[in-house]
Length: 609
Image 1 (cartoon, rainbow, N blue to C red):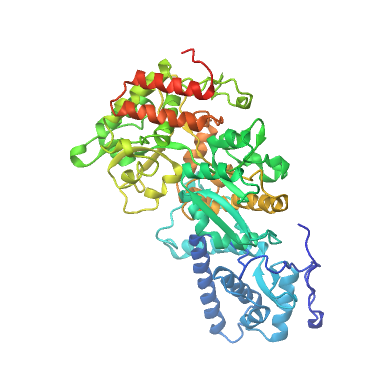
Image 2: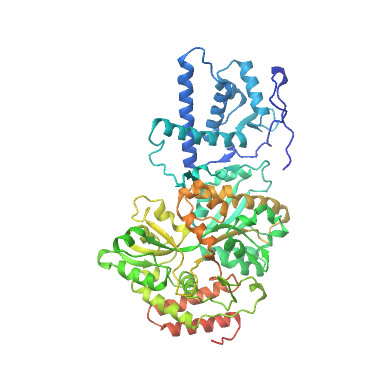
């Protein structure tokens, strides 16, 4: 955005600026209430405040040692400005001059020099524009953050011990991830979004979007308007998205959708192609995990921006595997062996947990298990590393459920049932991971977004003891980590006057800075390579390095749940017929035949299997 007119430096002070530069100001209400220029995670905020307090105390000691040691007005004003920013307190020109502890004329000159140097931003506090609040600029905050890190390391080097007893660092070949440049904090928009009634967002009620809800005030400050967020369960979210498309005008500016729904939402005109609303290059497409980015397309057009890429992995207890001498399973046979070995119902521990509740939950498991046996649910063309999905919008695909590999997958689930907890047939998304976190399960299939249940709970037996693997597969079939997660798109029936603001908000919510903030506040999903390589993100959880490595090995795949318009019906069918199989009502072969016939009816293609 072009910069607005800038306030002029008070020339009556006689200050000579170090270089000619306009003072940065922002329109009033660019942020509601006191405006944090950048969002900072709780831990980062704590670290910055700790170093800031140390420097303030050290400066006070030095200045009081001798009368000749005068206060440094630049340093004292900077400290006051940074503390006000971190503690969300309004800082004014008058308070900065007072904090300098220098004579008024001297402090005024130094303040004007800092303004001219671009270290301080001003925002109008009133409509008249005569009163300003003062904020650290991006340059000042970046320099101060880097200096704080150097001060902490100097203190450790000179005085021994670590500045934080719980501060673990990753070192490699004599270097440290600390030396890598982290993603900078999220910056406020230079102008607030102009959108009547605030921004309206429809999301899924999962941990990542709940982190976003918890950070709502900060995001409201960033985009300059209120955010009204509604969250639903997965099935209700799809229903509401479809119901919204039937309205004359959309109730929501942005809606989240499960990646497999892309084909349905595009074909039914629920979402607008994003190239009609924005320059796609602004999203930095190359920064997204390839599988997540491709999954958001239909017919070669982008309909959503990946907001969370969360593959389903196999979580396993590394300590239990070490105790029993087991190797991490790479094949389905090894998985069954590990589950049998670790299955100890008499001690309240079961081998493995997975999605087995009737309907949608089990349907996902069936499709992913078929993929582990090298069988996609549709007759997709085989390509290197998997199956081709680029031409699904052309149609002419058929279900491939009742096949020899499909039968092997069904029989595998029947075997897996023997080493599962007694309530496995009612377990779905969260129910399979909670007992794993409680120590009652040795292994669990689960999306990375559920990892906070044990990664953030130090009382969990799985805390710090969990390994992450792609799905074990049969020999000859590639190991895959089926990609799940959500994209965020713009409804096709959104009034045109609201589209520009929706685009800007969409860019903010899916930006590297926002994604890093989600991680720092508990999320374990991430759609971008840059975020996964951020040193602070890597220290937050080993899951990001593991998923990043899977992406580079081309193990992240979305073909196990191809995003055709009929996929939800197919998932439901598989989840119903195979649930009867697991209950002993149908044999595996009968369940597959029934599922095949029902899926053929949905797609109106006769089966040749």
